[in-house]
Image (cartoon, rainbow, N blue to C red; front, side, top):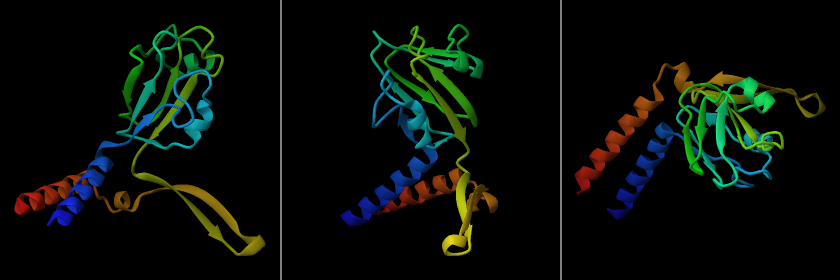
Length: 175
């Protein structure tokens, strides 16, 4: 019986994670919100989707986080911020599709590379690679396609909620 409960809890956590999204600590594992981290490299290995969140961790005596528009990002100008974060442990929810821009507002830090551009995508889209041929004649191309659940018209969050309800019912039957 203990094994069944453990399996039900594991399934529930996995489904909840699908609905809630991921938490990304900016710069981790190679760094954090500082002057040493390569944010272009960090972003290139991370997929951001709706429901995810960014966590900025830094020393408040040395840094801050300012969300700006593209022009402010390109010019490293924080004079017209969308939002300013000052706690040293800031959490920014990624609730809509689009590009978000963050810089350190301390003079000289953005120009030294302390800025990050985050492209938030839909959970329903996934990249695929299609290949034809063999050996030296192998030709591949990458494209973005809708997930099979989206193509079939299935609401993934509804499926996850239904799954959680089934798991909760199963747990109540055992207790």
